[in-house]
Image 1 (cartoon, one colour):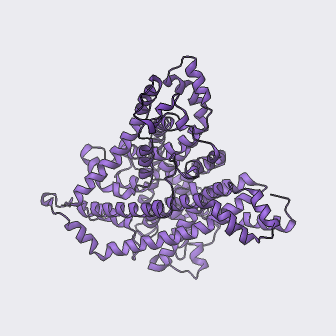
Image 2 (tube, rainbow over the protein chains, first blue to last red; image 1 turned 45 degrees about the vertical axis):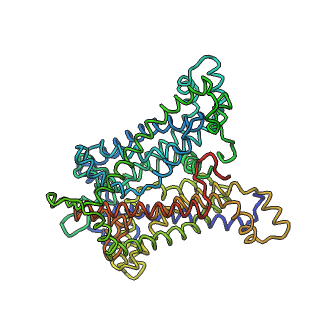
Image 3 (cartoon, rainbow over the protein chains, first blue to last red; image 1 turned 90 degrees about the vertical axis):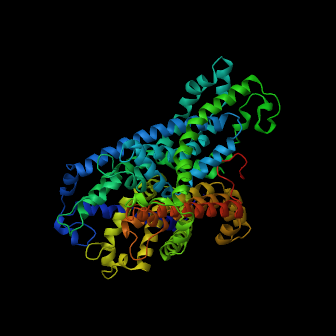
Length: 277
Length: 318
């Protein structure tokens, strides 16, 4: 854009401030609630009058939150790893190889990206119970991988299309098999796209709630978002607002870190698959 | 931007005969190897996707034709379309469908307008560009349940800042107000995603064209309506398709904010309740199938009616 006048500059700055405030206020409110002393929750002021770490030390010493947090991390990492490996293989084929049924594969991925999760919950609940997968890590990993795949195939094939494929040809001329060309030449070039994809898939797993509450029944496999509603308050009649807010802040921290470090990659990943169309 | 790169897909094969469109022509050894490799690379992903969605979907069709209640397993039997007539004559289903449609239309519509504004702000921001993109990504990344709790506590009388700001109101206890809060929560969460998709479309609009129009005396509004909007149409349609289907599946926000009480149940929360509170697998599966049909109808309307090419397909419009 050409040089802005002072007035235009002030206008855009004001717009930026509005965007920042709107984005942050609900998050800051959670932070504030998590720092309020237990008795002060019934104080609607935005900032706590008295600050306390009590809510955090409470949930971080309680198995009711720690175990689900470990589940969330473990299930998320395993699902992400498997999704990204399988999706890279498929995306490589989509971007570089010519084979019948390519459009059918893309259609299938799109169909699954649009799949209403709830339609899966009832039959999957029954299937998981009969297979003994209900309330296990594996019972969540399988659907997470399946729903991470379309996202992964889309994002990765968009990234893979931009890799200079002459290098692969050169490797093949030098005697590399197609598989070697994949693992030794393309994979290192593809690493940035794979990191982006891994972040997006992990965020999706980390975010899931519906499958997590449907396919788990105890803290042995319940993930953090699903565990929060089972926190107990001071008495049966009080909502455990402080602990829930503290847990919400804890599960938000990894996201803020991802976004801070990988902002460019996340934006590139989110828009690569969708806008290419 | 990936948008301007030509597809490497069809050029990757060494011999033109290997192109999928000329399947009858004899394949060279290299092309055969390519196909074989493609098969093995694609097979695991396809297997997982079909096993997790296709098989349960077929199973759901079967369950939806049965009377099957987990509390009365001995009375399980085939009852044809009785579940469908039970659901389709139930006021709960139609109310949930109506609530879901209202939430979808309003949240997607408002998100589109706000996302467009956000895209403009992100596009024009010269300084602190990375910072503002980072902050605007937080609502996208935050766990929906965490954000829902923030809104729920904010609207709780005597506890929340928003309730305090609105005369200590309790909007989550009345149907219309609760739906408004749900829509607000959805808009907050999804505007960044919409904004980023639109921003990518916006960056495809040539600056020269806008400048030329400005020189010719077009007002900013005319420039937006006559140049920016038509050029962004593909990006807008893809963003709308994704957002609409996503909004129609709304579950997390309603589950935390109202648990579907006071007439705020969506089709997804209704399906969930039938499974886990009523333990009725037959009715739950019927609702699941009906939701699947609704989603298929919405997607078809978008793809046929608006000419949205399947994103990512090789023959997509550009």
